[in-house]
Image 1 (cartoon, rainbow, N blue to C red):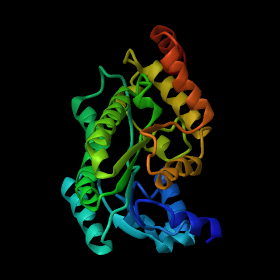
Image 2: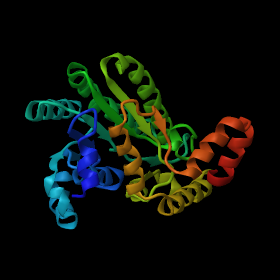
Image 3: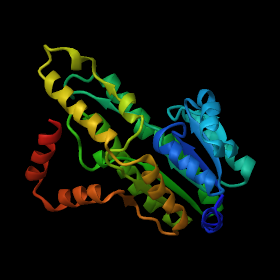
Image 4: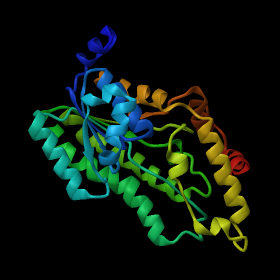
Length: 289
């Protein structure tokens, strides 16, 4: 471990014990590795952690220092139990990095409500299940940090990924309201919203069955849109870069409520604010519709 890592791990105002969800791949894995390297105690949670832990440790030996945990964020009881376990074992819960998630692609008209509910359950209520019990622990200890990994799609809805965009928008609203409620108690909330990122999210995306049905009025456009998303994601930012941006919040007493890593995506977010809506949405349609 470098002298720089040791120095930084001792200067976090929140503590040393951290829960990371979605820790077996992508941004969650990158955050877990960097936190372990910086000397934090990391509970690394994922639905697949039981199967993945040994493989991950053989690939990244530093992960021997993590505490692997199997967790489905859609299981409210399991999330509360894990938060309670961490607080009991370590006497604190300094921070949560909530990265778990997956997306669904399809036309709104053709996506069944059960699939839309799955998307909201995973992304929004999964966030609630993890964060809500942690707020009690953090309020009582008088400090804590919650970092939610969201997406620029929460602010810039993407056609044919509309339900994903809506769920991420709900997370943004949840974070803003929660941040105001918890401010007097020393608990900080920050949302990191990446753009296209090279992760397993691309392969894990659920694409509606009608995408292969040529009788669908949306099939051709949906397939073009999904192909564009996949290409952009695989040419996007590295998960390590997103992890560094997210972890920087650990060393700030007043982290930003919203952060978009990367100059390109900062510029896109700025353009959304200054361009007329019809002009900006025209550009989005050219890319994804």
